Length: 151
Image 1 (cartoon, rainbow, N blue to C red):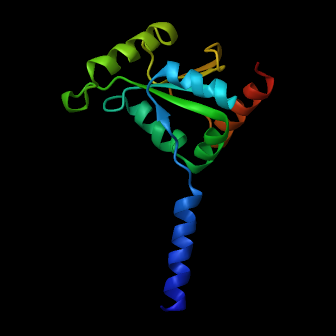
Image 2: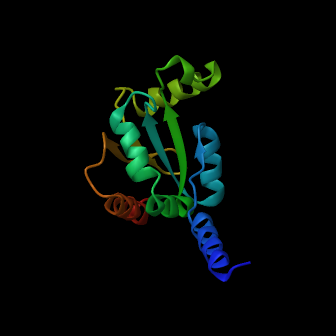
């Protein structure tokens, strides 16, 4: 095999494996168990994945970046509480019931996007309403500071 091709393939493989993808949970109770077991915090993200422009932008520009993914994998259990509107994206009745229950407790005003940092027991440490007006690095730094001074 050509050395240049082999080098290119190895480099591509390195970048593909060095980027960690976020595991999103859809059940807060399951996330709490994992957070307790792994001594992590929980980040809830209320989203309208097929209709809310700022929600879509937040996922793309902050939550799905390498910087955030690397940080969250080590420190957070991520929970997506989605409320899609298009018929083709509708949730199962069971998942909708779960999401409605979480929204009733943490987002009773129906704010989108709403991001909530919780302790492993579900205590709110901070809420961000709307799209954060900071860079991804600043958002991560703010969460780090809260974790360092949290419970």
